Image 1: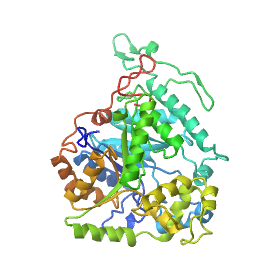
Image 2 (image 1 turned 90 degrees about the vertical axis):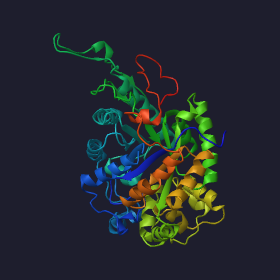
Image 3 (image 1 turned 135 degrees about the horizontal axis):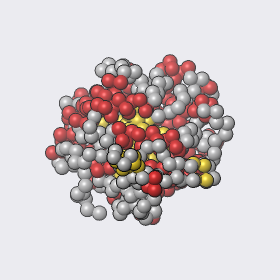
Length: 462
């Protein structure tokens, strides 16, 4: 591969409809805004991102307060460890009204929502936003969420992905159930739509029975782009088949480059264009007018704002394991790893980053609650652009999912100080070139499965 790439960075903003960003101490930063229950808060951030010509803002979601730790949500509430999660439908509707080009993504679970509901939600958002919707697919399994949705027993890891395969297949065919030219709208004859071009699915699978058709005409993008973050072997194969954007959590450039090559090979093996699928590691950018200012900020974020109990609360939630009986200085043993189903991949990734050796619970918890869980770019605008350019041009990524240290200042600083430098180097767009998210991502619009195969360069999930 050539060291100089002809394509440009994809930039995605990682959002929470919450009291915090993904960084759990963000609400304590002096300039953090606290009006997260006001729609204008999200509209303000979205306008900043659109000014910076970001491809997309997408919202993470959880359907319960973190309450695995100590079998209680008390510490999540006390320390602000993501106890607030607003409904994304309302948030994205408000953001769609305040923007024109910015892609709008939401997390919806294949465990807690039925396919018809998800298909209708995203088809509606795609129409009302002019073709800017994206769906972040998760196969969530968490006891706190299960108790809110009456789920007594979760499927095993691989079977959750089997169910998700059928789920996405149903959703994409529901989006296709109205052909593109099915609407007639002939006032004189009284014909609204051609019934021969609106199709029932009559789907009867292992997990779902769905008749269809969808109650929303085909989305402007044909099929809404899919984001996926599977990290296990099964998850990576799932992403290779379906995802347009793969959200990764690689802690170092070396790990990211290895993952990049392996994931692109999986995509090619699925018969898809590897170039059409973007691999985007989550990253933090801590920007200052001088390097000294940036380093001072970094120290505050790393050492002053995240409460240790917030770290343990979030680690328990992530791994679905109660760590209330442990000390932060307890070593993570092989026995512990083997007994906690959700911890194995996380430990392996952090150990790779740290070079192996013993690891304490404090180290692991900090990787989920502070700025340690992904690459951290610190410095002036040109210095951060240097680091991002190196990752991009060495094929360690196709862009980044930028997580905020605090809202809205982290994105404001990035757009003001880093984006102009990326543009100057030809690494990032100066303006939007398309009207839909697919067009801005350079993705082909797939034909309906009821009328033709997917166009070249797309694939099953393109």
